[in-house]
Amino acid sequence: MRVFDFPLLALQQSPDIDGSTRLMLECTSMLIGFGTIAFAVRLVRRVGRHHAPRTELSRRTLKQFASDVGRCWSWGAGAGFAGLGVLCCRPSIIGS
Image (cartoon, rainbow, N blue to C red; front, side, top):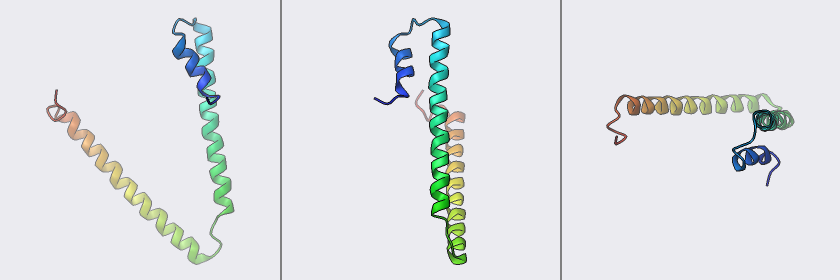
């Protein structure tokens, strides 16, 4: 079991916890979650600096790759939002 599971597990196992203890457990789990994200961002930046391209050709290739990935991601996000719009506007598709 991971450390960040304990506050949420305590809240799930004991739903009758009083307000101040519940607030403390919720804040602790959020602090651990955001701390984990911050640590991951820091780690990615350090690894990225370590593996940064050193030649101009490598930089151009990486920039083109990042542009292509961003374009693909934006098309996928656009398609997802369009699909969500269709589902929200036409509830008969969902099977209600």
